[in-house]
Image 1 (cartoon, one colour):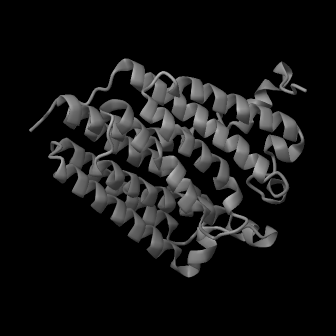
Image 2 (cartoon, one colour):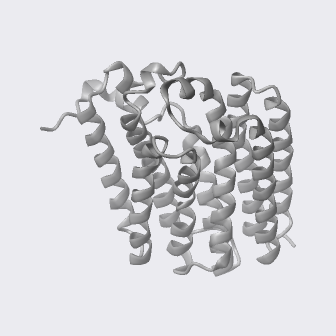
Length: 296
């Protein structure tokens, strides 16, 4: 039976986390990096076609929303016991389990319709995006590294974007994929630090629990690795200097995050996590200026 009801629209909106767009931004920025670089490689300017840009921007919103729905479905028996998540629609009973599954299927279906307007190679890659998005929420039951699976899922738009533009997956695509995966693990560790005490009580695993007292050192190492990989990619592809300026500004924000989180205060850790959106945006702006105006 079809369970989705118009009167529950606000609850569905919150279940999709559309009222908290930070995840959309963190997924969007790396997607735009790949689109800009691939377009620059193909045409010497970084502006992808309007069609491809619209497909990926809408796809980012839909897939992130689908990921939030299936994540809350997986955590439906735990969220009520965690301070930060106790008011989520599935935890409070505003949305039923059947409604959540139907909403997930609807969002995935809309995403696939968008992908069908691209080349067959990108359609093929989209299957792996669905697999990664579906399995991530359940990983915290079995491993302390669910953030690595999240990084793999959040980064999969990079090969898809490159394939849509240049119908190829050259080496820089996988370096960018690896760099973004590392960055995702870094900021999601900050996020996991917020819930560490509650996660320990309810038996959920996370990389913040695994790192323990070495969490801040691990985050710093991951962020520096991310910056190093992007410097390599930019230099290897001879992308003009504004891209590096954007990256250095992002590094400045990482330094601020280290200062914020040094006492491991939950509110400060969450603020540091949110700050990654600005870091990603600065890198995007730098790449946009570098590739679109071809500044030497």
